[in-house]
Image (cartoon, rainbow, N blue to C red; front, side, top):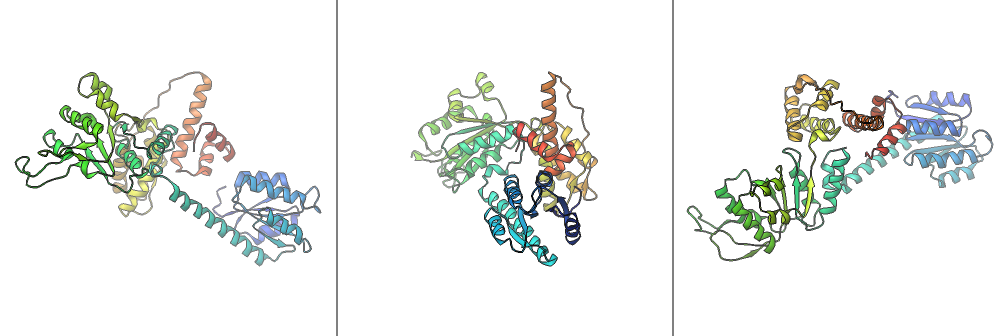
Length: 450
């Protein structure tokens, strides 16, 4: 359906009354059905928000049982649908029975068009309010991990791991290439933990000179060295009661590795120039793009420290391994950055989405965000083309396995890419894939996609 009007399903076996209702309610995209089987087919195909239904349907128009059975099946297929039943003047008992089975409202026949129109408009409004309430409730109930935009099954499993680990006190090591979102996951761990009311303190071990890193981590007393004119708390002590995120832990100097190991074992620190042991209650989350096991083999990282840090290891896949996520993230970045830059509503053109899908993104999500920001700023109109992004599509890899595996992988890849491009619009996704919505649901279920 390309009509932008709201779909209204009319279940009526009288052709003349069908036409009258279609004429009376032409402000909606009216869909008609004359029996239970055709009505169920239309519900599956169009998922209408509102249904008007005559209780007397073939093969026994004088018996309401067929209509009541259809009412039950519509609610089983589409619980959110608002069903308005049409009954005879003296059929109040069956109308009340339909209401008790979940019908939204009823009208008597012959109906007054104005009254039925008002009833239908109210049903649409109630449906919209309930949908909006469900979205708001989902937003309140969603975890911080839901801020990570992904449709990749592997990345979704990582989000579930974060949600399981967050309430515990386990030390977490996050591995992944630069730009994959390691700090975002670390913040999700903090926000989902009992320490959420405490501070989240981050420090990049590779960005601070070795001579200053110890004082940054552990703090110092007044007079501990030249220039130490006052007592200063370190990052570990500052994060007391919260979470300390040590980014690029693989670059931590060997001398500091021993001091960090002692803290992890004893949970006490000594400031530089101090003699007093200070107890600190902090959760440690670390991240690195390096292989710490290779660092251990080269005697550049302590093995005992590694096992202290790696109680839980989470490895983030690169963006190129997350099918469909590049386009999905690009849609989100365009909306956010266009709002920040006051560019109004901007969209990605099909050739831009092709280029985004084809690019390997060596800089991962950070590179994608920077590219989209530049494109939003430089684009002349409201549409962002491949030329604005500055990317050229690259041919894919045609590795062949057995035919069944190739077919399944191709189907899964196509579904993931299309879901990313359409930004969650399942009707549009089904249209691009050339399948019905039920078929798309079956494919998503088979491949474990949400």
